Length: 421
Image (tube, helix red, strand yellow):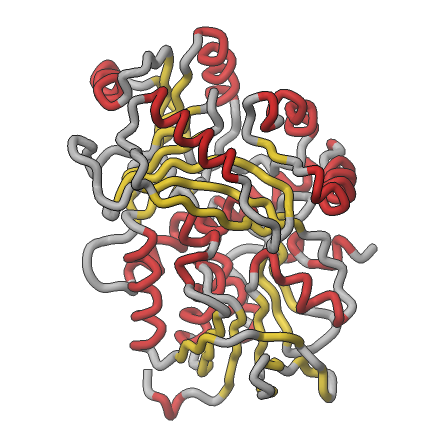
């Protein structure tokens, strides 16, 4: 793309998978882009997740089934749900909003909207992967779900086999697959199914680097800075930086995850978001004897997923309703280490700990759309557990909204207006 063709300017705030996907697609449309990221991009939830492209998860987690499961999922009872008392002022109001969003009518509407998005997620991933050089970042080999007791295997298999999983489907693990699982996990596995249609990322670090190279090669720019506010002038949003600069652009896109409310609330938007924090441990090197072509394995009894990346083996878990600034809970890494030891995973004392915040809205749907409070302002955040999955598609939707083109999926259900009625 020739620079002389660039007649409009866009500032994208946020360097995660959603933000960089927006920047790439806007640059592709002939809009000169500046991507502003606050910190090292590899620290965010986009790069610390399990690497799972979860097209099968069409049911919003704001459901009565989820609400009913909360007591048995609490961390102090051995589960993955953390509700720290120090943050009760945050998670109690959020939980009440979640309960309201879980009403059957709202759940059904959210499910239809999310299913439509996820139906387009894998093609969008294929398109953005094709822009990058080198080996593919996307591996479409599904994933396993395993159980360690007869009771959980019977109930879990029945639930997944009966579920509508959109473009994905489940089948029983073959004898060969069971043998592979049993060789990798000395701890007895009672049952296993395999999802066909989902995918994973070969390596988060390589993905981040490759996408940045695509953006820079197309003429986009990346700057590390702290955006403190979005003042308005003549009905348009400006970008105010901590260093005193104020930037103007034809399009301003907020893609700052769980921190998005701090920028949008002063403009009049209601953003009932919470930092839903997850934890992982990753080995510093690829483990011996663990094949790279091994799909992710979900241990449903432990609410843990294990993924083999090019750079190492990662075990991820936990849903902790908290705040961005709260200190990590070291007991959660201890729990992960205990799970790894019990399963015979090669995750030793040198495994690197990580914590990150999924940006979660009470109906477990993302916020994608154009602001009613500034004519040049768009937003893309709140993707909860599906940020990696929906990032490339969200970038295409935002580029369409910015240019007036038909979007690849209807963004109407994801407008922030749903919280302003």
